[in-house]
Length: 352
Image (tube, rainbow, N blue to C red; front, side):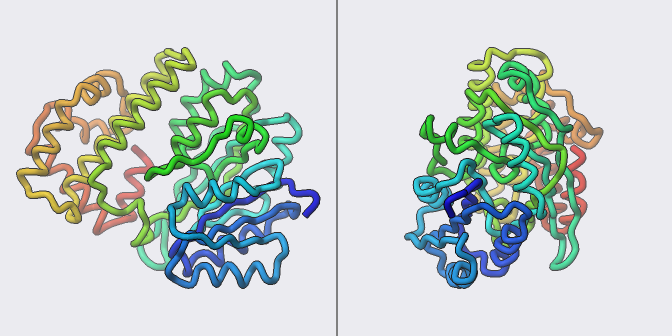
């Protein structure tokens, strides 16, 4: 372990059906000089024991057992003891293609990069064995300057490449010098990445897709009703506006992207409110929708956003009209599709 090129960090919690595949996809990487820090975050199932079994046979794997504190605390605990030149963050219910770490590492070393961003797959399962795959990527590129990255970052945001941690390789020196860590909050990935890209100077992009993000696991956090979803989306929107203000980037393409991405997420918030899992009464749901429709941020975003698909343009019409009843019915329709036809829902979402 004297030559640790990459520290792979993976929180584990209630993933006993999936964690073996995740671990083996790392063991099968063509780059061999890594340490694999697996953090058992107080999981109540057999996930921790499964990880221990792999660690007994592979000296590169170290399992840390701690009380449950959430994925952010798990990642941060591992970062404190990591020895690698680069950080890579894995989720325990996903898997990666064999050349991922090698390709990212070689690009980072060749250009002395602080951040490498790669493409990835979203595998959305609509039953136990069948899934639809969405591919997300941008062309190969090494940005020539900090300003060039900032001016073109809208393309990476637009293809969801800057939101998540598992399609990236991070310079440990860069991250640790700024004491960047994951915030103790739901959807902690995004604020961490915003803190990384805020002042980053040397960034490279790989068009190749390596990581398989597995969606539609019934117990996944991403499928649950959340009472605070709209507040979180408002907070994220402000983070984006603050970032671009700090960058002093105000061009039309960047601003349109920010407002379009926000209004797309507003549609998701409306669906969240009308979800069968939402315990509010019908009147309370409509009151929440009214609050959304008359939010000045929504009004402003509707003026700025240019939807990319015909179905998204039509979905925004009830919101533009501030029609609470029609928006409520639209949300119920989306919830119905999401619950009964995952394949169709994933396809429409990918083509929005």
